[in-house]
Image (cartoon, rainbow, N blue to C red; front, side, top):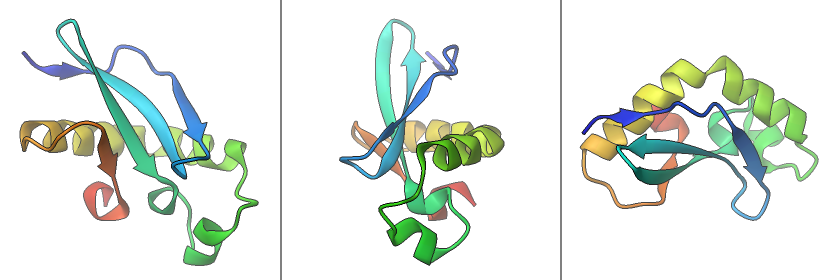
Length: 91
């Protein structure tokens, strides 16, 4: 089957310092995370604990197409879940 992203929901996972989203392969739910460092503009911003949820989620939304393409590639490459995407995967 093909990986799809029918649910646009995403959430900040402060424990993992990442934004979580879900893809689906048929009836199987596939968890993905995007490292905050891939979403913010500077390394200093990525290191700060003050990086806001709004900033991270807005950045995710702006990069959504690239993130979904990177997630699909990671899934097809056979990585293991949970899939953690970094700046190198997205840009």
